Length: 427
Image 1 (cartoon, rainbow, N blue to C red):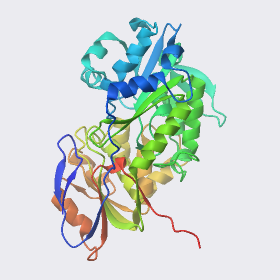
Image 2: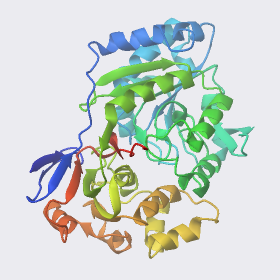
Image 3: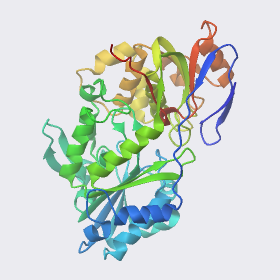
Image 4: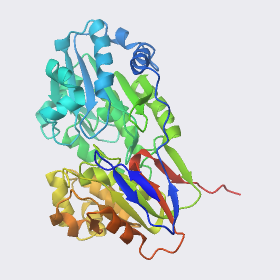
């Protein structure tokens, strides 16, 4: 069986060995909208649950727009011009608009990345706030959530007369789905907030996983933070497999996001009648597989359909290596997943520990193999699983010892498929 895997920018043509029962799980693709610009204009004029954007903008002098950083394939260069035109036509001057790069705790965007994220013309013409979560003075303290989470959100966002988020909706490894409230926190939050919302309290909750929204405690916390921060309006899109716009969801931050999640859930959900023995998966290629840190998302998404003791092969190019310094240090500091989980359970939260915690939780019950050629060799012995530089050797290791006709799921676009095992119907 031959399959094309999303891997870096170029993809990976993979030959799968015969003798196994393969199940190809591809991201279903809704049809692209016939006219993207018209669909965006219509959504802003007829939003979900609130007044048209032009009416919300009338009389305002300033606006802040939170957009994703380089790690997300958001089509800002197509959505942002339409949004900006509505704001300026409504009377908000160009010099009153600030575009906030919602990095969370990722590094700040480079000048070249700003051009890629926004388009060179917009990047050169508007005020840009390149968020750095480690500079507390750039954030305003807004109190705490009902459960006690301190809220520090970028002053550039909360001080604006109109506060907008611009993103897209996809499954998210701990928040259920991205988009909406995530562009406020963690996107524009200080590390003092981000560390708490990524603590074991949430990471180990069985409902803080991909596709879980209604009862997800982290989702509820971030909704509360976004409300307190004054998020007025959101514009999120859903994308096709070719990253065309398939749906536009604009309006009230919670109601519009809910509509987008429902749409994306219907498109992405794949059900299996029983767990599989192994999975070949990815982190959906560039830009999501730039680092090993991001590649964990492919592992967690696949873990829901693999039997206990089963195997996951994650294929991610990782051209930027392992990740941020804090994450790199943690990879090398613990001899086993259990040692790491024990160490962080009651300790103060460290930057980036949550991603490694999610990986460790998977490794409690599954085996993980890594095709991550961009991760330097110095990290290989510490990655809690075998590391490979070519697909053929990784695949041989994945199937070694598996019985004939073992069930193997193949997920070319990794976390863009929301796969679950069908729950048995009670008698």
